Amino acid sequence: MIRRISKLYTEQFRNLASQTIEFHPGINCITGDNGNGKTNVLEAIYCLATKKSFRKNTAFPQLLSADGEKPEIILSGLFEEEKKAFTLSGRMHTEGTDWSLDGRPVKRRDIIPAIFVNPMDSFSFHQVPGFRRSWFDEHLSLLSSQYKELLTKFQKSLRFRNALLSKKPGQYLEQIRATDPAFAALNVELLNLRKKLVHELIAPLNEIFKSIFSMEHDLVLSVDSQLSGLASDAVLRLWQERQENDVLRGHTTRGVHKDDYVLLFDGMNAYEYCSLGQQKMAYLSLLFAYITLFRYKFSSFPIVLIDDVSGELDRFRWQKLVAHLKESQFQVFITTANENFKEELMQHLDDAKHMNIGHGKINQQ
Image (cartoon, rainbow, N blue to C red; front, side):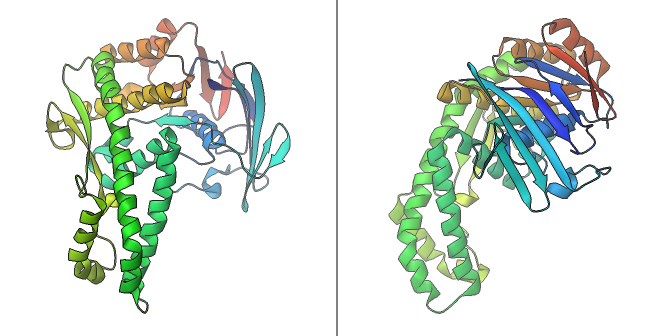
């Protein structure tokens, strides 16, 4: 089952004009000078699909057009899957978002998988452990409902334990000792599933790194955890040994919330030894490997949104990427302000849909 968006209507979303945009089921190329709204089109699709922006710390006030006549945003999309279609609409306002499916109000709605590919995120991915943790938690949760459920339980239990350690209510140590056995088992279960899912990414990661970017190097992904190899009883002993330190600091200092993810480039840590260009190619390879694994697990694809990757690749790797997109079966949106890359897209993707944007208005070519 492959789900695609065929039409998008926007009203008062950032700088985008009130308009209906029609899309191709395969590749959609959006060109235009910087500052005209290319990324905003991707963001509108992402918000409609996932109920949130891919930009950090972004809420309704940031999304609302500065020229808006009333405090609301309308997003509506026509989605198609196999032989059926449905309309998903959202009215965003100061109190939240009202959703409707085929014109009928709904209180709860499913997320439509969508992946945002921004090479600029490579720096944060390679330099900020917290970014890596959030990235993997978000994407692994889409791959596995079990992972999402375990992660939710873990985060709730961690907040409870940390609240006891920081506020220190009466008999708080007794409460910690009573709940730690179940929490330790949860740590071990989550770590084991995390390692399993990450291991499944290794083969497509290495293959894509070599095929798209022609890098004759091995790229391996692993989980670096303080709890590796420990059973739940050993985790309990570790916490008991560190109890005084945890009490002093007011939070849990050991656990899978401290896990990190390591990309090994020919056996060396890519975060430390790779050039910025190699790091960006490794990050892009990870994203496309994730899309490959998503297809394997669900016989489907997420909607793929690629924001101006042209500035990060030389001409040869542009062509390799374009060839990969042409062979792929997923719906993809790719933006660029680069004239050379625009010509490359026009030349090699003649069956794609090409659009130009100016002052928030799409010109559908």
